[in-house]
Image 1 (spheres, rainbow, N blue to C red):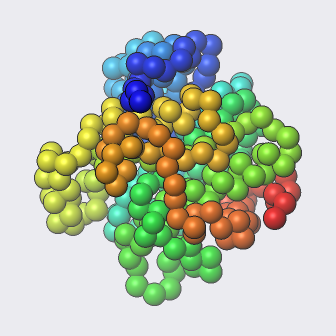
Image 2: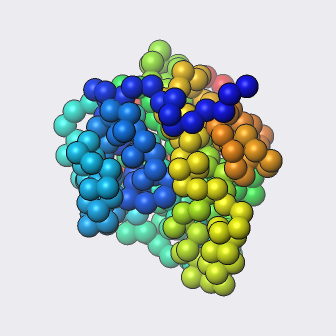
Length: 296
């Protein structure tokens, strides 16, 4: 059985793709591959200067727009300035295992950036999305637990990896619930998810602890490249797969390899928790999607 690579990307001419956090890592690799296939790619990034450097490396098909997912004002401004259709939204940006910090709106940084920011962005752009929404999760969803009564870690001791796992579990619950709601309305838009396995990116260097050094060594010895890590995202964004599909590497433990459909935990597929998380996310962000919960 052949191994899928970016060389097999279908032509993307005439298509527009927004990629959050695309100035480096798998976001940059995905954006560059899509542009090479003919897409017009929008690098939605917090640091515009770095975004412009990345766009110059990609070429004329890349443009840059400011987006700070840790600020709902920034998310709203980005969506308000978007004046046309978008074929694919790739919710890629994220932070991992950072020290306890808060977003501009007071959310715990990881749930605020990785889930709530993307939840708001998707909701504000959804009426202009024509093909699909791809959200990047992680194998770390397996250690996650949704704290419905305390998403923002306002009580008890903060656990950076627990918070990261919660945010990545939230990415999958969001994807599957979005797909259920889209399907219930008869929409042709699909929601899919992907995870990169263990890819060497800048994500591993913001824990502000000795783990940065450990992961730096592991990146050199064990991790696959950002280009390989981007393949599941590219597959989820361009291949004819069902809404609600989850794509990851095909190697041992899904840590490396070529993209194929993968499974997830029962917790990620719990429709009741997904509905409750959705309602809480709408409450916290003030972004309401305008369609009813999917049938149970």
